[in-house]
Length: 86
Image (cartoon, rainbow, N blue to C red; front, side):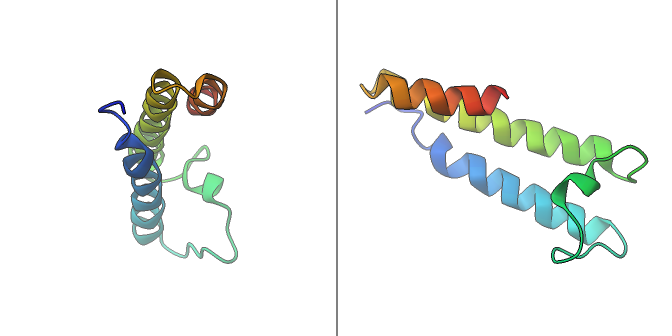
């Protein structure tokens, strides 16, 4: 197995940490009422910091896809890597 398969756990955890941090930094934000995208929309108070957190999450997911592709599951790996890029 590839040594970068740990990014499959780290990517979603980085996403979750970013969402929770954004919710705690944004006054009046509710996970039930508001969409996650509202944390980084134009005019949001911490959009740059949260955007960086989401970019790290996507990068980790992309690296996981490359690790999966290198371990033998080529199609699945490239699809996961494509998700990270998008």
